[in-house]
Length: 363
Ligand code: KG4
Ligand code: ZN
Image (cartoon, rainbow, N blue to C red; front, side):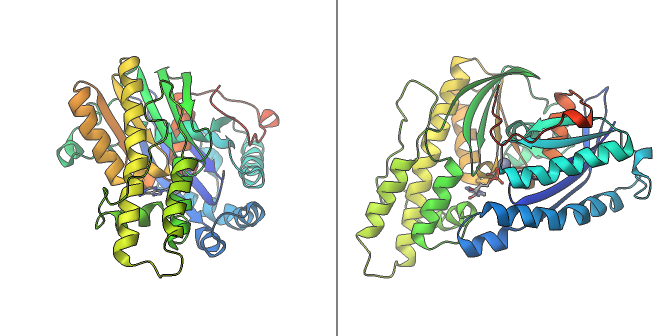
């Protein structure tokens, strides 16, 4: 089954074509094209929704063309002959951006006479872990890169941590389509915390990857920043207190230019505060629900320190539980993960019934 997937929930325009083997459940990425309006947003220090939507309009058709043209076995002039189904992100996200993808998917489905599978973007981040081509999906352990996709199969029950710029959620997956939300952030998302701390340090948006880089040469014990709610019994998170603590610290320095060492130490200490609480709650949820797998997803899952810390804690505290982290390019927004979520939670609809839903959530 060939799935053409479209992702436009925020500032990335993504189109992927995936070949899904309905017997073995193996997914092969045939193309995964992404255009990003990120440079525009780093100039404004964050995403301006209507700018993102206009950029989506600009990129949508060229990205579809590029995906069709770069896929072997697909005739770009006659995609109906090889594409079986259209998948599209319907939410959550920015309404203007979502509408571009949804209306494009509806038009394609109508013109090509194909069904559509509507996809929850957050589920997409989780299902980046189900793209089972060798080396596509991996833990951080170099040796495990070589093991076959068979061995990498996710087993249920699984606990998934979705950490992105807009979301921080812990969910229990009992089986495909059987998902229970356990908790989430009460204020800022983890990625948002990285981005806001970055802004205080003068790092352009989005700051997560740069903070990770700076943190490598910093002292994570230089500042004792809080990991809010780390001892609470629920599975909720809160990151606004951390942001305020970093703000207070940087205000002490307001007349001086921050030294490189100071920026590195703030980066390392705040990254540690974020990772400690993410890892602690994920392990707690995995223990409570006797998870056989832990799945990481979302832009912040690209953070190597988070992956390594979670890997170490999983090994120490739940040695029989398998940890899955998508390869970095599948952590941030992309359409391949949307195709994967569509395949494993297959529910097709006629084009007339598909609607963008910016507030869509788990259940
Ligand atoms: O999933 P994503 O691409 O978009 C949303 O759905 O939000 O996530 C983007 C977020 C940004 O907040 C960015 O700062 C963060 O992911 N991010 C990282 C890293 N790479 C991206 N955060 C920490 N460490 C990273 N290496
Ligand atoms: Zn995302």
